[in-house]
Structures are given as structure tokens and as C-alpha cells.
Length: 70
Image 1: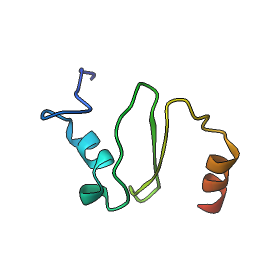
Image 2: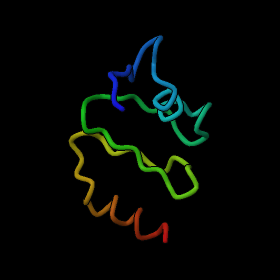
Image 3: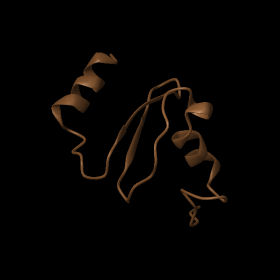
């Protein structure tokens, strides 16, 4: 069920390739900086935003994103 995967480099796991490449996800480029980085995906499977590892997911900006999506 679980395995170690690469989130950077030549052997990047396909999910992270999609998450980090605007050419793939159509929204933004990003870089995995550290553990606990979060990617927000909507109910249709679209990338919405990235939350940096040190940013609190319940910050007013992110909560506003959740509320405006409804």
C-alpha cells in the first residue's frame, strides 16, 4: 500500500510531476520544499492552490479559498 517515492528529480512520481508542473496541471508551477507541503485539489480533480509547509492551512487566506469554492 505504501512505498517511498521521489517528489523531485528525474524519477519524480507522476502525481508530483502533475502537481508541480503548470504544463501538466494548467494552473501553476511549484516546488516541493519540505514535508507537510499541501496541495489543494477541488472536487473535479483540479489543482487549486499550494500551502507551503510553514503556512497554516487555517489561515484566513486559505479559509477564504475554501469558502469561495462552495
